[in-house]
Image 1 (cartoon, rainbow, N blue to C red):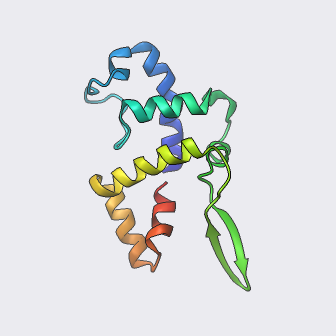
Image 2: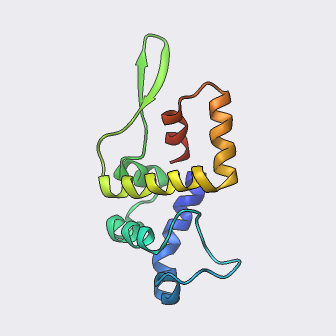
Length: 131
């Protein structure tokens, strides 16, 4: 899931250059790139804050830069993941807004959250997975 989002994010600058009418907020035509929860302002914020997606060769590098990557912690024999408080907080906030919108409006995201809840995950833990 994050790999797909990473690949779509890599395409945003090209689309903004080739089709500026979409960057101004006009709806995308069917078959063109669109991510649920990403409007023109959020897309512009992500493009501006990332500052050249070419410098990230893997999605994990972008996640670490944005502060979205979870940090593994161990308590005894139990492995958990905690929130990364580092990274670019502006990117993290934009991705968080997208995740909240998807949790509210996007059936696949809602299904993911439901599965995580059935697996006894907390709401925060499920949202971390969605991000």
